[in-house]
Length: 261
Ligand code: COA
Image: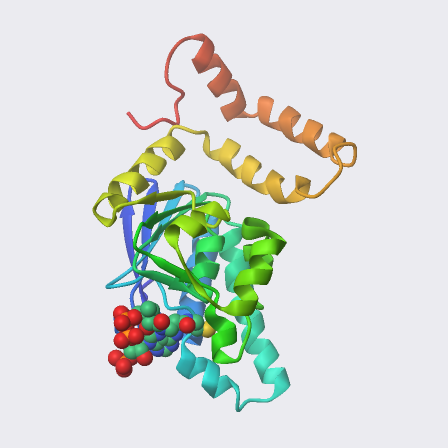
């Protein structure tokens, strides 16, 4: 498939997806959302895909929702607005629920929905000079569609501060609140991303998918409520091909078959 606003580069089991609308700082409108949704649908079916790296072309990762699009939507009916917002929610959900690992490579700025995109990544690596912000209230709107993904990352307290003020904050603060995992000098961004890619390629693809699916099911639950789910999950994985191969490889002091040679 060809895209107008995404650049895709495949490197074995790793796909680099770059938002490519640098003139408007990779702001996304309905066309970008449609492309990201189509990409996520095909990624979901791609059994050879193990790691995705999301980045942005040009000066910044993403300036979030396209203000021109948001302002155009203001003239539409409530029903049209809801349909449009649902398409955005569905895109965030699709990326969030991909069975492979997703890394955010964040530089320059990640504002509004740009920070939302960071929140649907499993691992976020940011350049130290990146500016983050849930700036929507400064524009008279609010971070609604991204909130289900941002809240589990940053928690209620930081959300009350940052959603309400719309203030911009540093990469160091983003790491402190759980939105970002690693902060490095911009020139070391690719090396830091590559270290995570290497770690992920040495982990079992089905183990990654199962762990990723388990986390939201267990989060917020009482241990006794999820006792059966967790027992069923480990039992299924131990008996799976990769469960058997991983444990056998460890005992035989060799690399499991899924580790690239
Ligand atoms: N929607 C639409 N256009 C946007 C945009 C957005 N969210 N963010 C930036 N742009 C456009 C600017 O209007 C400008 O267009 P122009 O060249 O026609 O004047 C162009 O992108 C470059 O923006 P500029 O502000 O000059 O770039 P910068 O590199 O100095 O700063 C940002 C980059 C991202 C820090 C800055 O553009 C910004 O703060 N944008 C607003 C982000 C925001 O609040 N997003 C939340 C939306 S809900």
